[in-house]
Length: 416
Image (tube, rainbow, N blue to C red):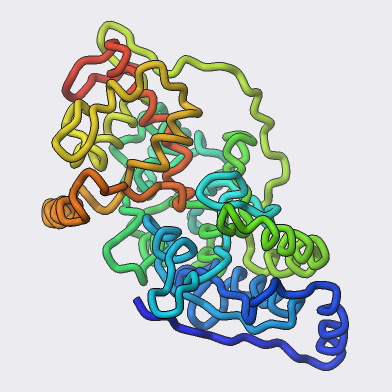
């Protein structure tokens, strides 16, 4: 990967004069000569090389306020993003490749996050003019009962999956791979290709993706935010810096506060679904898993499926460990879900198209060749907002196995 530098300036009449005057309010950090942004070159509505994404425009605002050019280091925003960008040092210069990542979860993890600049929720998208209206997930089942069978498209582990399966629509779901091998292709294709062409009738996608690509389509579409699923599924995003860069985080927070109205105007141009009337989620303590007569609830079953599409490659078919990865049943003894997320998740798990045999073999070769397996650390799922909400499903399955409540092999589901 080589560094591609793109310098972005905005000088327009009175705006220029105002910006230059205001820039004196914020001074660059010592030694800072540019705003070095880690971003994906093919990831609209967030960013692209043509600087058309809202993150590109927000980064330009940061450059304006500091009186510095904006420089990009491009890398696909998927598994391994932080490891290969903001945490990686250029061996020629001895400096980090970039200093700020955009659209990072506004929670402390691999990054030190700024205040968020947008929040969203998963959404349902369907074509207009088809003679029906969808306002919530259950409407699909109601149409099905009336003889209108809709083809449903979603990415595996989507938030709507559990409800659709409970409604008896599993045979009408077509699952799509979130991260295809070609990094130039993103999740918007479920709308621009599959939904627009009629191969599916309703799509589920993350809010910014749903709103943007529906508005860009030549086929008229309706976007319905899944506000029914509750406030627990509203996720907020801001910028992320290295944990040791607290001064840089503070400076960015000041800029975000000063230019919050301008940033809100930018975000509004990308047609994000409304968060009005989001159902308030009452936080109640729920059972980690449910097992009745040896059969498991949907949450635990989804966790089994997630483990056996990804983690088994290193941790073994039944999570009991291999020569290259530990026994997770032992690791989870007495471990809370919070600790699982913060300690285990950030260190071990990855999603690298492991269901493909050739990719699986290539990945195992990579593990074996990286300074020996004892020093190999799996990349994290924290960069992917589409997977993160379903880590609790994985925990449910592994916890049930660790507690001895669930045996080996494919579990049966509790009959609805």
